Length: 102
Length: 497
Image 1 (cartoon, chains in turn green, orange):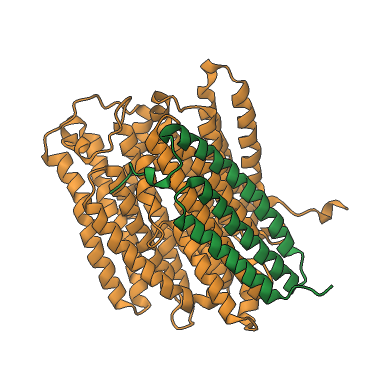
Image 2 (cartoon, chains in turn red, yellow; image 1 turned 90 degrees about the vertical axis):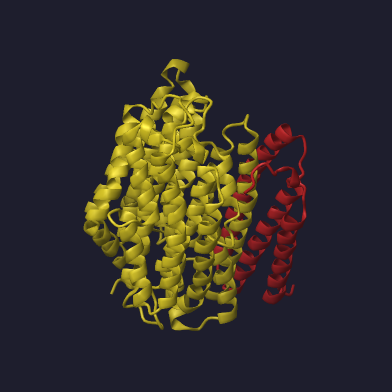
């Protein structure tokens, strides 16, 4: 089986990252923003795996595992905040978060 | 596997002890009866004191030399140990300042102390990280704890809003940093910062990918430091978080962020200094301009101090960007030690000024409007005098240490030949003096608006006095702290010759 060329993997990672970044900036629903952040983190994890394959090292995959674990931890905190937010404001619209200004 | 195959853990003793004791406190707090809950506070202080003493012992044992462990992932050089000592002391001061405030609002529970201790552990790991994985793990441990601390007051809508904004932007910044790290790994083939510096120095590296990664790393760092253009979270989070959490966020994490910047940029990427210094110039000038001008318009002292943080961190960057001149590192120790001195001094000033906000607040009263400080001199002359010292230090008025810190940084900038940058920094500091001195004017020349009692408690009063007077003492005798910073920075791997 032919290996996936490095460039293609990195382009895919860059596309996914840009997609996630755009999602965080454009989406107004906090839940979708969290999902977009997940996409960003997974794109970086993919870039690590691709880079690790290029150097024939296990380090990239080790980073991948850690990024996955930390993304899970981050989502745990994020969803807890999301629940708190929904109970306070009754909406997940990021534009409702506008008490702090100046 | 024989005993000699195990890593020598001596450099990490402080962190290991902190981890064990924090976990123990987590369990002890669960089984404590309600009337003994105050014990957690003292246990946390004892933990920090024990880590402080142990770190001093580690410095003695290593003789101030850089000691590596965990396969080079973890380094305990003098800079790491000094910064860790300041972090432990700062967190302990935060716990003392915030005890009464939290008790009056029903937040003096185990969660606060455990989150604070684990955040401290994250900072210590960040400060000692010599590997991108360790750096990222420490950063996330700190950040996740701090997000939760901001949201600890579940009944407050502003706290929830602040926590959510902090979380989304913080996670975004972590993503940017991590993406930059993956590019650096792709270009150099190593995650170890020492090896990365060696690989880059040899020069067989794809420069485009490297600089691409560098841009993302600098973006991630600038978020954690809170400098323009990634400063948006600072005013909202400082304003919305409970005062005690604002005090926490504005002190120890700044030291960790400084250490992270030094580890990535100096330890790992000093051969790219020509590239990252240009980015820091733009960020520093914009931060000082935006921070100082926006602070003038504020009526809330927490928001005002938040914008002042942005300007101070911009000022600190001036020290970092003055190190390498035309590929020449001779003046780097002076410049980086000025930046380190500035960060340490800023943390002391921030501890004092937010500590004052906490000391003046009481049940149902947050003391966060500038008007609450009117006529403080008539109500409590000593606290007003301490606040005067702190404001003078933040503004950089001569007898205080704030002046010396600014002088050291500007000296480094001038030695690097960037006269225009020094002029801009001085002018913007003058703008900043306006809003600090306005607080002094309110305290001394206006009539009090608020007649409530001021009862900060004896321990807080003593600590605030020490903190405020330190501004004066360090300002008159900055030599020993400055010398310590210089020795610490000279021990950094790329500068040690």
